[in-house]
Length: 128
Image (cartoon, rainbow, N blue to C red):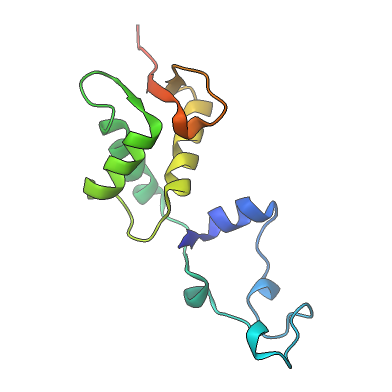
């Protein structure tokens, strides 16, 4: 399942109503295999509210634990399994994007530079 913002991110453009409507000219209506799907059939949920995003961010940061450093894959896995802030059906990719945004905003820092963030470790930026 993907949220609308994740789908737009993957497409590299905003979603258009024609992406989900029966009058999409790119769909061969004579082929039952290409019958258009609605949002629910696509597994797409509405974009999370700012409150939900804040809870997700707090939950992900809580996964850093007392040591303050953790592997990204472990953080996301534990968060998805045990956090009440985890949204059922959202993929790990969504939470990886949240971590990337926290890194970009300066809230988290990558400890070991690796080719893929999912294999890296992160920690909170110290406040001193």
